[in-house]
Length: 73
Image 1 (cartoon, one colour):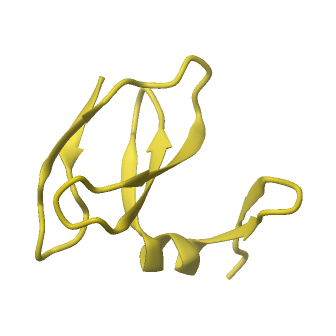
Image 2 (cartoon, rainbow, N blue to C red; image 1 turned 90 degrees about the vertical axis):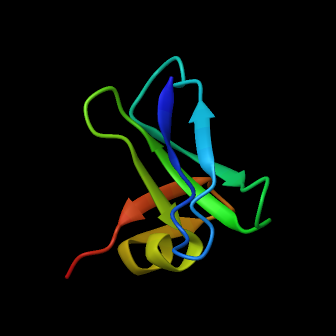
């Protein structure tokens, strides 16, 4: 399980999500309290929850190929 809270500062709803079978990978979720999109990075060592804006700042999402690439600075 990945335990944490909604990454939006004005929400912080507690969350518990089962870890995926083959980490590392991303999952798109919707917070049950505030209804906003959360991107959860599944990792056994360092899971991270991103706001939609925080995810977009760090990663490029290609919906056509269903791929995610880290942006180069």
